[in-house]
Image (cartoon, rainbow, N blue to C red):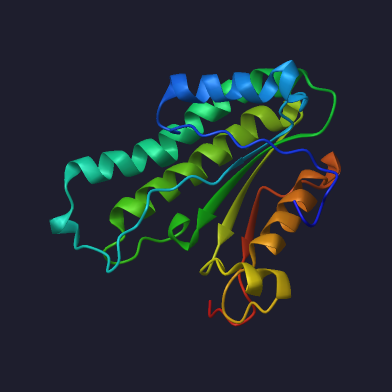
Length: 197
């Protein structure tokens, strides 16, 4: 990590819709050999790959809808159940940070499958916040209203134009994780200054 060279990272692949793969990934992450310690922050940012142009609802197959739900809502359900038992016992700050989108608030034409999972993620985040907030786990949902910048040179130069810089998103997530318990945010909108809303 160029911005935080002292931060130790580990890349682990898992299908978020597969409970066994997720459990194996968590075991690898928390293993003594990884030297990462306990999970204090879970950033859930999984979403189905969208095809462009967006297909009409009548052209979607049930399988596509189910896959979208499996990656999104089911995936967050699986990961939350895996990490929450230890988070509740952890004396340090712990957070579940969930990436949503404008579709978390309103469904768009030809985006029924995407909006459905984003609505579900938002609802699950709200429910978990109400259940586990009193037990010390900060659960926050982020509405990313705009396209995420993907060009590494533009990301590093901070020339966002009309796109969201992922480094700025990461800084915001970290800020939310660090909030004192007396002033937790449960939902936050992030958008570039040029985005109309």
